[in-house]
Length: 325
Image (cartoon, rainbow, N blue to C red; front, side):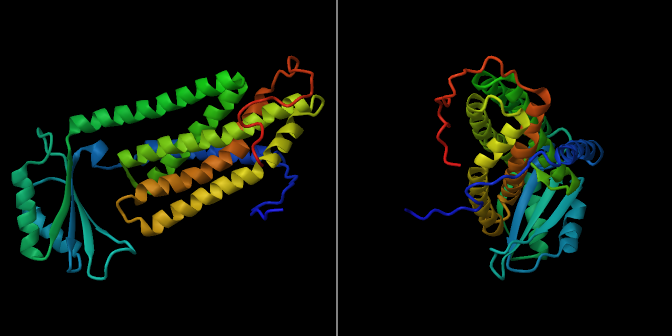
């Protein structure tokens, strides 16, 4: 018999509902705290959403933020934020900084003359400085991007809700979408609390999290639907526990392999994609949690009508019926 790696025993008997009010209450609290954080602290919007210009500089000399700021102070460009970037993949003499300049009034983007003046001012204090990238987004474009990002997440959630409703029952759809909304809000809350940069790459990460989370939830629900036809007299709570235990190995293996890849990207991927990868890393963890402790808890609260289930006792024939748990 071929040897197979298992991160959990082949058969488990974990009571996922033992602390259901604590786990579900913690999820509700996390959503509330995240919403309050967004309302009170706001999001640290990147240039994509706020409008303005971001200039990336590189130099063989150490970055002195104070000197850079003083060099730019006479250009009258408004709010300027200068951040030194640290990354373990940088060479010993590679020093990187990000210079963020607010959107200029009446301008869709900073003018080429202003960019040239910035580069000249910085070269006057650091002759070795180079400018690998310059990104500009106007205020009108950024407001449209915010609206489009919100609509993209809402449309994805609606499509998932319709799909799960048609494939299963409305209780499953409500539980799935509630878990997805939980994942997105808590992830956004973390970005608000720690004031991490929130730009279009983070929106892409949130959409990816939706897809990952719903895949995990659908596999669990598909096994639950199969068990509904096999165990007629088993209480719904016990059946959900059985289902979660049967699919636990698959859930842990999928999450673990994904986390290994994302952890490598966080460490070695560089600062450019670090925000996206961090959002994905946190999203995979919170998505796995919500599949086990949020989605099925809501289904249990809503209840299921089991009176019209087939009485043949045969497993339902569908795509995930033979998933190796």
